[in-house]
Length: 319
Ligand code: 3HC
Image (cartoon, rainbow, N blue to C red):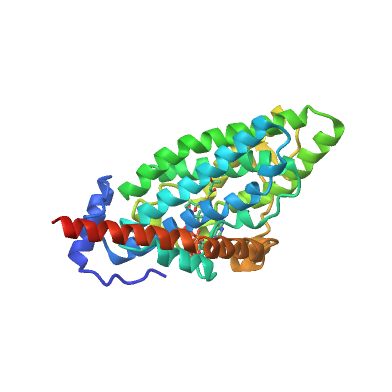
């Protein structure tokens, strides 16, 4: 159900005409309340996802099998932190305070991507996350790099460059395991079996069940629907799995010559909504870890505040 605008209809019409002309909306431009609210919702959840997303992989930094793998994983996890902070900066151009957003995450009020509520049980999970999760993020974020809101679109351009490294390092690790010992092959096949369907869920519910997609599409934030992006990810990933002789856990997968799509089976939407609503395998553990990190970081925030106050005082004194 479309939420009625609280804004002046003429201004909304002029805004929508700008969107229709493909114009980029900048922070100082007038925008409807709903446009701003939808962007804050989507961008803050994206930022939360990047920050929480560090946890599953970070779990393996101390146990990486070689210095090369450790360095690659360290770089990736550090990148994710940067992505989160970068997108929080983007939300602040909409007049929100990131501390408020982080408070919503820590209180459990805000969402983050369901994919990060699954456990990383073996080293192979790290490679499969790079391949599937960052691969899905690239499909989604390449589309968002054309979003109507300038700061978000520009953030996506920069982030996608790093996501490509994330996907490549992940797929290389997967390919190495896939041609390794029988034990390594079994380990990476097991990781593929566990991460495939949750990765498809990253793209959100089917468009027909999506309460936000129509509005976001009308306003040019989303250029493509959840279903189209999911299908693109499947089409890209199936040949990659075949190339390393790994089997995707979907007996219904079949290539449709006419459409050029790899048709796939039914997603378990009960599992999806259970995880989105907070009852996934690791939801509580992830929030507990973020709350602990936030508490342990209190002294850093206090020190930064004290330093900033001292700077302000000396600036006033010098004026
Ligand atoms: N996980 C958690 N919540 C999800 C979800 C998912 N995979 N998919 C949908 N939802 C939530 C939505 O937030 C919405 O709830 P809300 O209205 O309370 O916010 C509800 O389910 C209905 O979904 P909609 O399709 O209506 O929501 P959207 O139109 O916002 O689509 C989305 C969901 C595809 C995640 C979209 O928000 C999006 O593209 N967001 C930006 C990209 C993003 O956040 N990616 C997350 C992964 S980040 C990542 O992969 C990091 C990489 O470095 C590894």
